[in-house]
Length: 70
Image (cartoon, rainbow, N blue to C red; front, side, top):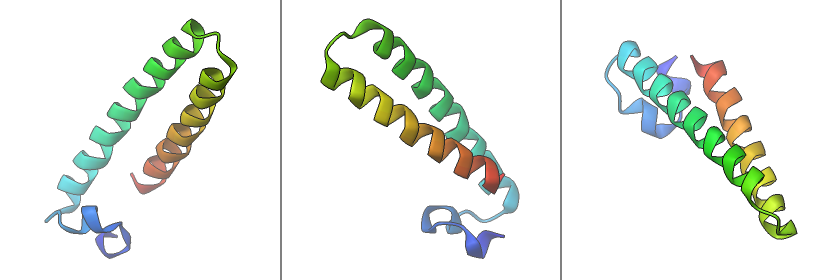
């Protein structure tokens, strides 16, 4: 499993360390998604709304990827 992971994960020594790192990133993304939702609800400029939507989509894609790794 470790050989198929991105380079930053290959440096980890054990599968447990890799799993902890993935779970940590999932938690960070979850917090960032909450922040994006808050900012989306506070802005009214079309460009900022569009930026929030794209960032949310990007974070959700990263989240799905990390879930597949775990």
